[in-house]
Length: 231
Image (tube, rainbow, N blue to C red; front, side, top):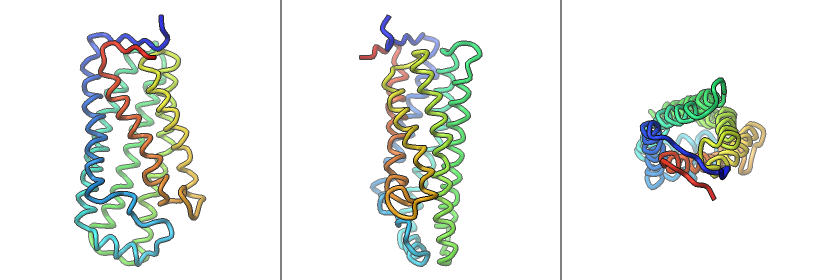
């Protein structure tokens, strides 16, 4: 039997279908926020508190609208996580902790991301002083950066499950590994004062997270197939 061939039984179609729509919407809905206010236009790490306060006030309505879409999209990741966890649990050997590891890790990712969104929403809720704007802005992105560790753990568990037990197409594991390695680099954000890996650097803000979105989208498209034959 080809190592990349995965047979998905009829009984798995329900969680697979849920994973497909939840994962797809979890990527498309946040993508809808980009035209409202592109995330790469957010102030950089060295921006002063006064400038951040003026920026938040000037773009308040657009930021609120984009945050709403981001929050709904990431919230759907919880549904996606539950469906993928069920998919893994049903196919892994009895006693394997890989499905639980993935589930716990990814729920932690969503929790930290939503926590970061909460801090940012507090900042744009009403005008803030320069000092408080700096604190809230850094805290929001710091919380998001901390999601890198549970993300790497969850994606690592998923990749091992695919490579070792062939529970899904191997290409999903390849993307998971790339995203896991990249997310470990998020910890550099607490060391680097400037540059792409600083707290609001472009790799931290949207470069590395794009790999997570790529994995979610690819897995969502793959998991629903009844029979998948890898290349």
